[in-house]
Length: 117
Length: 109
Image (cartoon, rainbow over all chains, first blue to last red; front, side, top):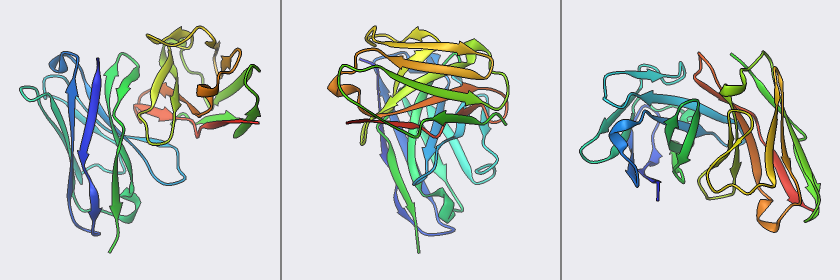
């Protein structure tokens, strides 16, 4: 069964850092691009970042560019998102998702990040 | 950036009825670049429909998608109790790569 499970997150201070991880199972992880999507309270879903299957290409939303770093370890079937220079507006549930052509499937259940002093 | 606007915001229906959910794009979206998802609280969003009208694996036939250009529709024929959830649309583009509608909450009357 194709499955993604996020971990990490929690409470971070403005200007601080947090790290999210996502472990994949049930499919050949190294064959797929992977993405992070987030949803802030009361807001619509927002694309955050994606990474190519072979780690050679990354892309970020303007809102996180220069602050967040996406990475992956194909040997461990894991996807990561390093959140630096946290801002209040980074408070959200963060989802990892597998990119399949022009859609996302599956998604993880989400990890909550709260930024507060 | 292509903005997706879903309507209605909330839809109140009874089991057995038909739900019609709309998603309007601010610019033309190719049929291959449009998808629908179901999201229940505390769960992972679930792909329902890709490429406007292709049901994902394991999705019941009561779910169907249609549309083109700027107007897309998700129809659920014969609502089951487990169908009451939030539904959102998604388009694949350039910048940002994915954009999403604000969601329609389908609630039981």
